[in-house]
Length: 289
Image 1 (cartoon, one colour):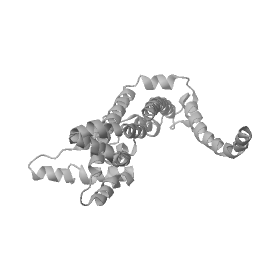
Image 2 (image 1 turned 90 degrees about the vertical axis):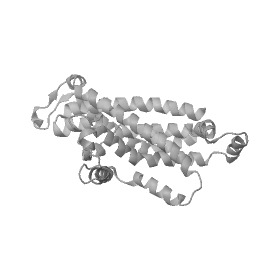
Image 3 (image 1 turned 60 degrees about the vertical axis):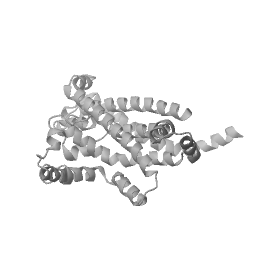
Image 4 (image 1 turned 180 degrees about the horizontal axis):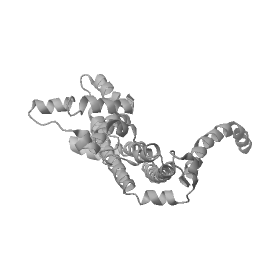
């Protein structure tokens, strides 16, 4: 009976599965095909088979390794900021204090702002070296204003992305905090546990699964950060803030080299799947524990 029901489900599910496969397979197949072609948009009629030369050209290009290093720095830095601050803020917002509902609303709001708008706000209103709020505050205390996007481009990108994604980490971790058994906390307090011991031995182990989920989801998204870099630094100065996603854009739409850009896309897909595989296994082990 169960096998008959399973067979009846196949015609119902197959259209959705077919659309999903087409949606995924066709772009991937085209990317693979273009990565094996010598194809420049400035001379589309000169397209010819190139084999693995696009991959060789990209791998031997120092720009690729700079972009991969920048991608690693960006992902790790933003993860540290969002997870650490998200955990501390989750503990804070789990407490009762006047105006907690309004404070929660305000701190979650940045997550619903589009990345392009977020980047423009930080570029023109907050970190601008002449008209920005931070420059005004620094001049008010006698300090020289800093050109953050010129002198510290990667640090500025980390600040922007962290500001945008901190609310996401806070939402997940705060939800997990509210599922913590109050009787367990009270028992720990009665045994003489202070706030520090309570945090490290009760709260943090309870948040372990939620933290793993936050790390997995954020890492997948951070590997493809683009809008914040495009709007603020355009990958510069030089390649100082160019990540892998932005390097692919440069090769495809600024250098017009579709073949090399497609090879970069294939490398990015492979790296993303490797990272997702290990993160998924880690989260699965955490959930089973």
